[in-house]
Length: 273
Image 1 (cartoon, rainbow, N blue to C red):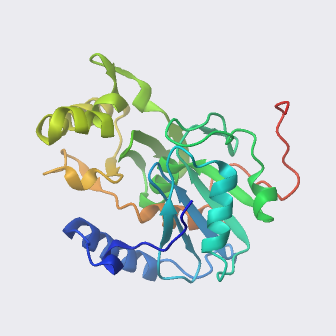
Image 2 (image 1 turned 30 degrees about the vertical axis):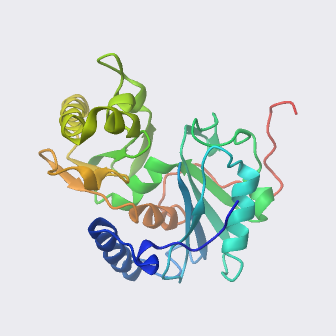
């Protein structure tokens, strides 16, 4: 597994969307205190299907390494530790690309390696850890109040609902749609199969249906593929991926509503080895 810092701009091949992303990240970092209201130094890990991205309190550059179908939780931890070796952090936030209940993954991601269910992240890092669904973490970073629906257009369809500050992770991407599911039409598979024009129509239709069903005050559309939309659906705003880091920092503020952290050495899986 290669471990590297890989901002596209440093490679000299940043797209316009990526350039805007780096600008948004710079603004975000200025907006986030080095030690938030919790007073803790936080390491935030955003686990994705193509890369693992990390940022810590007081740092100004996202570091990343490639993920993919061979990435197990042990390899993820090893890669993060190597990449963050010169950073100081007391606690860890992990955005996980799958279902999380009670602060623990309940199923292995379809696009990564196996072994995530029952893995002791707190023991592996030697620090308290909070694990949330990656869409929920980005939703927390995008939240401004009221009832907000978050939709993440990426490998699949990440979904989360926040009502008066209470986070409700959801798996709406698995709902039936046409001959498949929402995720199969507006995720990466649908984009590559149907092309941008048809995919954009599908996204608009899915967003309209979910807004009608859930009646949010506002809808935030994020994820890596939001930049492929030529226009946002009505009553929506763009959520940048960098907001996942803001969400990871917010997990450790006193007023967060995420399940308790997992202290090192205290969490043991109920599953038999």
